[in-house]
Image 1: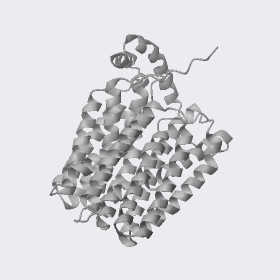
Image 2: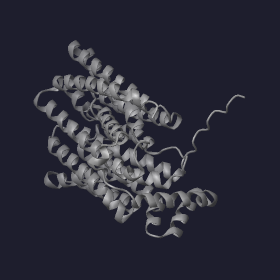
Image 3: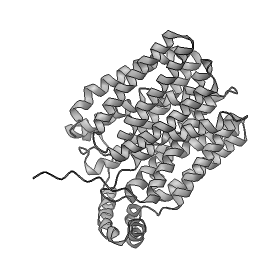
Image 4: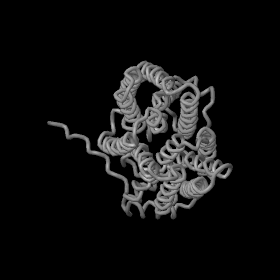
Length: 426
């Protein structure tokens, strides 16, 4: 007999999918705002990038205890309000108030990076398609929208922050339409409210089955422990932690985020017209749609996609070096296209593949620790890489950044190829 092909996982409810997509657009919109600020002639970009990066780290560290005590939904709402206020303050004022506003926006993004995965996981049913890969896939679209909306404005940076405030408002509306996490409600002996939340999203029959899984998840949340050196003596846990570190390197080392944030600045320095920036932003949006299609159609081959993304990043970095040696208009356009290839390698392949999955070798009582380490480590490395890239461009020039991107891409693909092939069957 011919075996039946496996059925595709069902999609999550529309309200929940819209929430995930709004979260992804909001997260990407901050990168777009930073891209406009960095390229804006008025300066102040370095201070704002430092403030935003530090605030993102603080938001990630503080978001998890806030979600534990305040609730997932209310934490998301608080972060959305922070983002609206912070972005609005930055758009309307300059100087110290703008730095405070940038900090609030960064704090909100760090908190959303914690709250959104919890909301998407705990409001979904077993077997639903994972939503965080879809959210992260849409990040470049949010950045492209901000750049396209702000670049031709007479006040570029304020317009970019205003668009970010609009993205935060959309996220706020989508969060308001969702109930509180049933797992969080069950933890507080509010089982009836948890069942009603599930029934409102999925229907009575599905909720009747899902409530048992929700109780199991709530019990496991109570049993969560911190990762200790003793845990690292277990070979399976040590291997899972090492693989998680390699995935963070694959996400951030090839400078995909830096390529997006610095693309308008580099295009301006190369003497290219605004058409190059518009083409880059439009391409980011197209890449986001391609990534969304891929993550909703291809749910397997997670590590293989990471390996492929690392290889594509090396190709993009190689063309960067080629464009620098060519010079002239041809070399300038080669550099811009290569930056887009770096963005594509990360946004289409690597970032979505690294989201929403728990390594099966992690014991159930360390799942929370693994999620916390991945979120905090990813934000810490991303902020550091972005700040370092901006410093290199400012004090050493674009050629130094191009060589750094090439070296880091080669290092990343070497680390990935040494580690992940043995993980392809995990």
